[in-house]
Image (tube, rainbow over all chains, first blue to last red; front, side):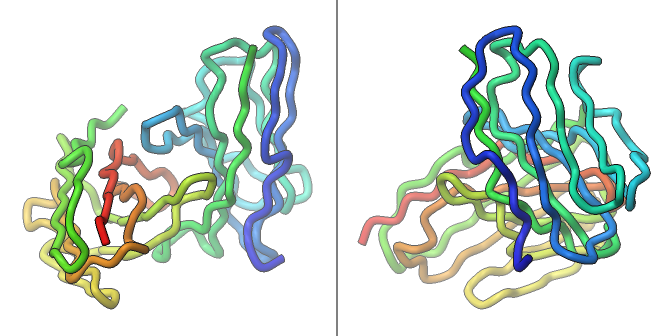
Length: 114
Length: 110
C-alpha cells in the first residue's frame, strides 16, 4: 500500500486480556519497527525486524510483550495479560533499508486497558 | 535509556513569527531526525541530518546537527497556522533504534 497501515486504530481491553496489534508495512520495506508512545511523551523503541529476523528486542518492557514477522512483511505485536500501564499508542514504522531516510510511521493503535 | 532534553515544551506564537526549538543529548549521536506529529497520526519526517555541523533546509524549516554531536536545533520561519502540532527530535547511533525527545507543542495564533 501507499503507507504503513495499522489495525485496529483503537482497542479497549480489560485488564488481564491478551491483545494483538497488526502492522502492514510499505510494500518492499525490509525493516520494521515498533514503538510505544505514552500520553504526552515521545515514542520509545520496542523492537526491530529486518525481514523476518527480529534483530533487536531490547525495548520490550516485559516478557508479556511479543512481536513476530513470520514472512518478512506483516508484523503482529502481542501483549499478554494486559496491565493498565500498557495503555499507550503503539506505532509501527517501516524503512526500505533501515538506513539513511528515517522511518515512515503508521497512524498507530491506541490501546486503553481498563 | 538515553536522555534527550527537548525545549521548549510548548510555544504560543503569532502567525508570521519565527520559531526555534532544540534538543540536547547526554551522548553522541550519528543521526538526528526531526518529526512533526498531529493528533491521531503518526510522526512525519521533516528533516534528516547525518553529519556534525550539517545545516539542512526543507522549505521554511531549517535544522542543524550540532558540532559536538550532542545537540540539534530546528527553526521554522514565518510560521503559519498549519504549522501547529508537536515537533519531536530523534537521535541514533545507528539507524535501527532512535531515541525521541518529549516534544515541543507549537500553537500558532492567526
